[in-house]
Image (cartoon, rainbow, N blue to C red; front, side, top):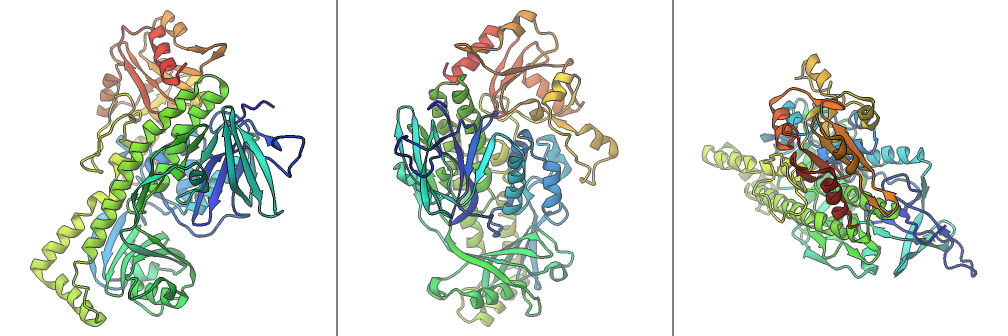
Length: 605
């Protein structure tokens, strides 16, 4: 095998039970006759053999991240994961519909908000009706792992740790520890992708610094297994924000019947970190539930700080930062989703370089595309966290006497004037629980910070995600590209006819391993012949789909706007990158050679 191979490694660090993508080269018990022990041609997308290494021998049980955004679901769908099955494994739409604000789960109901966009109208902008799909991270990881287990191009090695790496002009040599055997081996790859989390060893060894703030609040996460359905009754919800002098925070209901997490901020002077044990955790959980007769076990607990970090650089030589490029709080559900989108952006670029239809310059666009998104999302996460914990502190809970503080709380709720302020405070959290613009509205190349995270308007410009519209395949060519149909039958508001027309999205026309060119119904043969560019002898993969021959839009006002803005009614069309983002919208006078040149410029060839 040649030195130009790439290996993808997935690490799990001790602080973060998250799958981290790291491109690494494998080497086993050191052979003095070779520089490294193993080589793996590796791809992050596109049928290249890859190696996955995980820190732990088995998956950790703590649920951790849980909110998969519509963009993450769209990405999962593009890569062949069964998103219909994923929805069946997560929290039901009915259970996840609300965010409740309560004195405790058994106490007074203060207010409620919709949890993200779960209304049927959101299907106009994404094929994923559950705007945020709630599924415990270990369950999502298991679905991904099952898919990888059936992929002949992927090898998974568990109980492995990253130690160090060295770079040269041609690639990276990485030393990996086999934690079970107690020995080390070296792996040679063309690229290393560091996605081992907030405390990334890889990022640290590369000397990549981060910007951000160290701490805003000290937090505690407590995982427990109570059955909360009898407690909440009809007040089901994805999140329950508890406002009480004994506990200030929120309960994430992964499954109301047996799987919950309480995240609360605490006074480190009153309860120093070393004082936290199972007994204190039980006391805190009981205060949040509001009853002593609900049985539960404390499964785990860990402290953390409400802070943000974004790497100053996303690439050093042949090494790039994946989810290790950023860390920010869970307020907004943006962390895991940002990491998935990072990998989505980087995958086709590494594949292009590996296969010879992209230059190494293409990898520089990874930072250009994704770093600003991380800055925006981290800022919004901090804004959400500060805003809501500030609100929780305005309920008269600062009296050291718990009973007096609780009496002040109820007095505030019962006071008509104060209740107006409380209602305004709850309504002021709308943006926290509706981040549609951040999830699907980011535009690569833009340096704008959205004025409101909720206000999404489809954009038909370079760098924007291809806007969603429902389509119908008309040819075998289209059917071979499309994933399995979307099943929106779980949306009770839809008629059977509406369900039948919502099966495929415009996003489904875009393969993860090729550029997609959507053109009007009457393209010139010369145009079609000239579109696909070459890099030397390597042909760049391009799929050309023709309106009214390969696909048509399902009639709707949005469909007409989609066709007009993409120039498909005027003899033009659109070039879409493998990551489903627009490369260019072109007019009817644009030649196939000019489209080919646009693709070559993007690839740096």
